[in-house]
Length: 194
Image 1 (cartoon, helix red, strand yellow):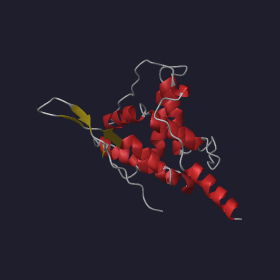
Image 2 (cartoon, helix red, strand yellow):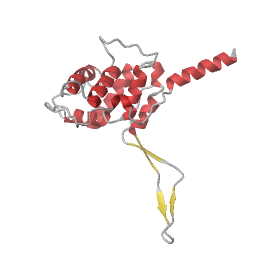
Image 3 (cartoon, rainbow, N blue to C red):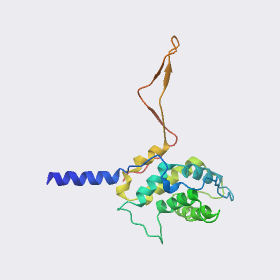
Image 4 (cartoon, one colour):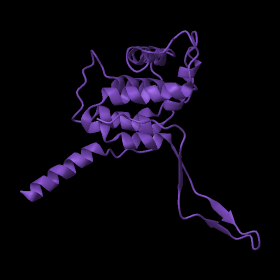
């Protein structure tokens, strides 16, 4: 009985901790043409954040992992935020039939945010890129299930910069690398408990 419980726990652990790669999946390779988004009114903050997010293989791979998870239940009629954004990823990176397909794929993503995590924002005012990204991750958290909440630690890698220091001796000029990696976050996104 203990052996079965251990196997069940290991299976649950494997589902919670996705093997998310930082390399681009061949699925997203395609159009090398630079793409942008139309900038009506005061949406440059959103478009700047989208350029950052849509150029992150780690985020794309995490979303594909979540979308393909056996625990994920999403229908195409009322798609969840992760599925919608994953479709935007694919459309943006691959370049579909027309040059405006990525704009069409953005519409339902933006609509979900406007009624979700971005609902309390005055849309007629210029907003902050950092706040948009924070609300973006809040939207992901709010629309993902309990099993996937433990895998949000993988998303923290998206926000982290890791560096190693190199030291040079002033006397002899010998170089050495630090043994410890420094980690700094470019943005801290906290996910609610529970």
